[in-house]
Length: 296
Length: 225
Ligand code: HEM
Ligand code: SF4
Ligand code: SF4
Image: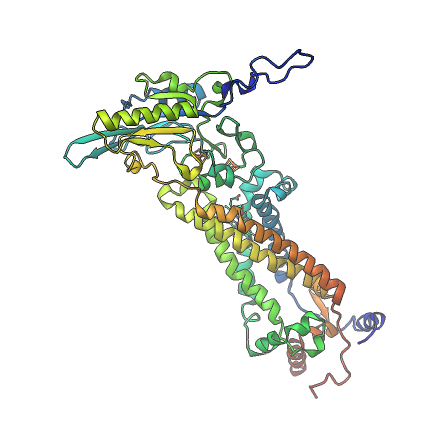
């Protein structure tokens, strides 16, 4: 994980193996969001804004506790609110911290045409490199979570970096640092998965949430941001978290078979034309017969 | 069949016997369309595949290409609309075209003397024309949907999913049509390219490749006398 850049695995002229090499085998990072203990204070929103240094801009107030309807190019971390009426008539205020999920199989990256505009690090973080972004918005089409956002001023797309700049320095992401309730955790994927499962079990067995569970959707290969939900059967309740997210099938078709059919057809066409020219040569005009054939 | 040398000297002796095939307006619009299409092709291929991404460097880099591609798309659509206006009548497909289409293999084998006579445009040219006309409608609709990605709300994302497939597929259909068109007119059919530049063809060219059109013109000029 964070130590990936500082951990030494080979040393020149060194007697014996590098000390500590291979001790840390788990490089995959993970953020755990426990929606059941989130109080909606928005400290994480502020921390994200502060650390990444983007200006706060006008928002739309739509009669909820939400700062804005969805994340924005300069606002990567948004608590989504939902007043959910349960079957017994009681109301639950569901709060979910929305941000990039850092998919193991990222649709944004699959769709992006620009060399180097989106990278995935060995620790699982999916990072946009704005210097290489051409602003086409294909990543927006590829993402199943509605995360990448276009900046009309920069003509480029931005999203949560999972604080890759902090993580490489061995720090936890800014949102984690700011959370006052401890509902945000950061660590290796197996650690976070275990913690999440333990919490879900507790919710099921001791808090009466029979459907409590962990959200780590397999459709995108798992994510490097996972949730604990009271009701894992209905993730849509939590600000529209998709139940079974996949990279859109049309993006798969477009970047897969269509690409190959198109390229082969292009190549075949060019070869065919060259063949035709070599076999039949050019068409030339003929001389008009004296009587022109038909007209008197 | 006559030898190369003979046919060249034949057309040379007919130099005074030239027929106007394309007006200045038709020619200017044709090249406007061709240049805007070439730009769309270069930039579109750059977005299409990493193996073509370097093409964007030829026209100022990826961001610049992304900015201008849709605008050139509008310009190209306008050009095609103008062609439609100019050529719609001459491009009408009739029974003589269908007869021609049935023996198109003779055309492919360069056995043009075994083909029914054609009007101002042959069946292949007509198909190319209509193919481009219908394609540009689809490209325009899907292109506009992809243009301002951020303007399309999340609830309408399926429009984007559809548009990208349509845009890429139809673009490739037009690329196929375009390649055949360039090959036929610039390489295969001698005299064709020149006619789109200075507007004129020899009478022999017109007689060989578009005999109904040739006869009509001759008939018309005769009746004028
Ligand atoms: C008619 C108006 C047109 C408009 C408004 C338009 C607009 C667009 C837009 C917005 C995109 C996607 C984003 C980007 O620019 O990177 C795109 C991609 C593309 N366009 Fe167009 N376009 C038009 C015509 C054409 C034409 C005539 C061609 C033919 C070569 C073409 C070929 C392409 C290709 C190959 C792509 C990339 C598709 C991919 O990434 O797989 N476009 N166009
Ligand atoms: S907008 Fe930028 S990051 Fe998104 S797909 Fe296009 S080039 Fe890649
Ligand atoms: S959530 Fe969207 S933007 Fe984030 S990695 Fe997954 S596909 Fe990419």
